[in-house]
Picture 1 (cartoon, rainbow, N blue to C red):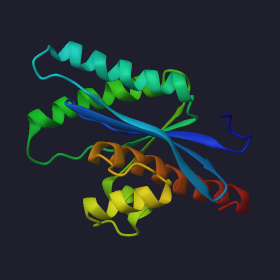
Picture 2 (picture 1 turned 180 degrees about the vertical axis):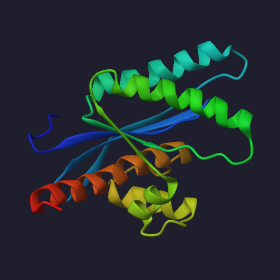
Picture 3 (picture 1 turned 90 degrees about the vertical axis):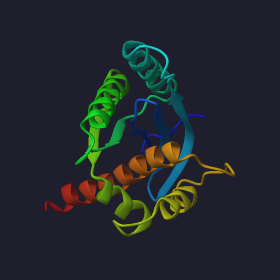
Amino acid sequence: MSASSSAIRILGIDPGLANTGWGMVEHEAQSIRELDSGIVVTDAGVSLAERLQAIYDGVHQAVLRWQPGAVAVESLFFAKNTKTAMSVAQARGVAILAATKEGAEFHEYTPLQIKQAVAGRGRATKEQVIKMVRVIANVREESLADHTADALAAAICHCNFAKFESRRKIFGR
């Protein structure tokens, strides 16, 4: 299936050391649809280097298959657990490298922006986000894993911001 000339593919990433979710959407005019999604699961019993390599390989494989024009990732915010923040930051960095290596533009959004773009409110629950991701991106799967839903939500958020930016350029604001 080939994308039309005005369609853009966006890869959303939900980074984590144990589970890195990814979701690929195609955005054209008023339509957003899921093309593919998955989770890179790493084994806690292997070295950090092996886990980071698995994340890189999994995300890069999706990039090679779908050739996104843009990558959307949630910005990090950790107030309490520094150890968790460090491991997520390492996984995030590897995933971003894998996703942008082939030339896709990188964009990051706050959790508030993502929830607002998908569910209409920045304090939306996980269940509300999952429900709206399924509706907006025409996801046909019965169940949608949290990490996949979060990745697709980031991609959908970028679609909304990209529309706003293109309008701003047209009207010079």
